Structures are given as structure tokens and as C-alpha cells.
Amino acid sequence: GDPDAGLMFVGEGPGRNEDEQGRPFVGRAGDLLSKMIVAMGLSREQVYIANIVKCRPPQNRTPTPHEVDACSDYLRRQIMIIQPKAIVALGAPATKFLLDSSQSIGALRGSWHKYEGLLPNGPAIDVMPTFHPAYLLRQYTTDNRKKVWSDLQQAMARLED
Image (cartoon, rainbow, N blue to C red; front, side, top):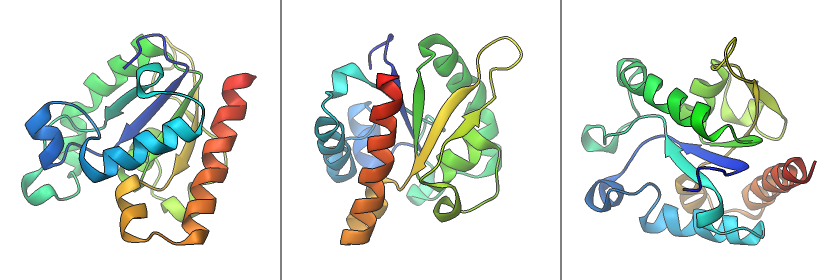
């Protein structure tokens, strides 16, 4: 991604396609994320995309807390280097990590929160939680699409501030 990106997307972890290609968000979920980014008036080259874990968990399961802890310093360094204006957290695992919260993605999405993992040496960064593209592919309803689009519109407005 762009090392000067104003917007950063953080997902859960690489899947099979990501492991094979060595890039985040490729395959069907990546295609949908690319379409979402384009709908925002941006390109993948203008944003930074990362995951909370850097290697694929067995059977593509949700990362364990131990796996997240093992990779957390790397993600913090990525965020510190990029220092985006805003982060879009894609799905529950990324949201829970960034916000240090146990609340559901349904309860957190749609409103701004703060990532404070860089304090006291770095800034607090605005976080907009939203549904993961893989979830949208499984639950592709009008209501879910509207919710995600609303979240992304808020992120676009934050970039313009």
C-alpha cells in the first residue's frame, strides 16, 4: 500500500489466496474490497491494507489471542509508520484488536472509535468498524450493503476533514 495513505484497512488475516500470492485481500473478498475502495473514489494504490495476523491460521480459522499477540507489534509498527487519518476495521477480529473491545461488530460498526495503541508516543487514530468483505459475500443483503456503504461514506468524510 501507499506509505503516505490517509486511509488504512485492517482485516483479520491472510486466507489461502493471500498466502499463495503474498498480498492482503486477494480472491473473492479482495475483489469486493477493491470494488468498495473504487466506489469511495480511491484505488488500492492510494490506501494501505494490512491484517492483524501475518500468516494464515490452520483451516483458515479465526486467529487465537496468542496468534494476535504474536503479530501485534508488527501491525502497531505498520500503523505508526503510515499514521493514517482513519482506519477501517474489517470484521470482528480486527475491530476487537484495534479497539481492545469484546463488543460485537454489530454493536461497534457505524460509529467512530479511537485506536490508542500508539499512545503515548504516537497519535490516537480514528477507527470505523464495518463488516468484513467475506461476511458480505456470505450475507449479501441490501441491509448489510447499506450499512457498509454508510460506514465507508463516514470514512470518506473523515478523509476530507
